[in-house]
Length: 132
Image 1 (cartoon, rainbow, N blue to C red):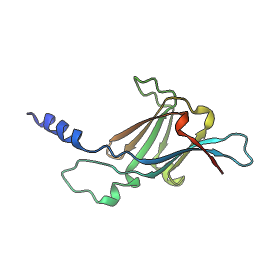
Image 2: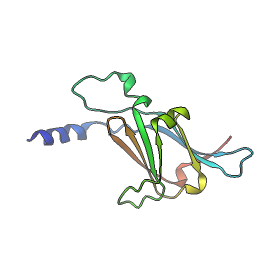
Image 3: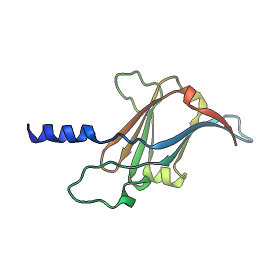
Image 4: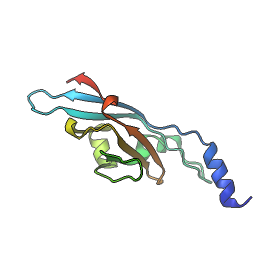
């Protein structure tokens, strides 16, 4: 078996621990439009490294960008929106966008600083109403 086949086999055995996320619709006070919210509660990078990486560097601090394709077609990702680490941190790891952008099939990609991605397919039904 080649080295790349070995790496592929090892990678496929790593559990896909996606981010722990809450999806909800927030009723805005004194504003006309409600917001769809994504609250990232927990994130952990599962990087494979020859050199040990401190656990505290594998948490939310390792989240580099979140990207959304609001109308994912099932074939390819067409980025419609993005939030970089600095924006995420500034907003307490909450992402908000107009509820009108919600569709039945959206792809959300969470990318860490090492280039690893976690992909989720979500839709309108995954966002529950919540009072502000």
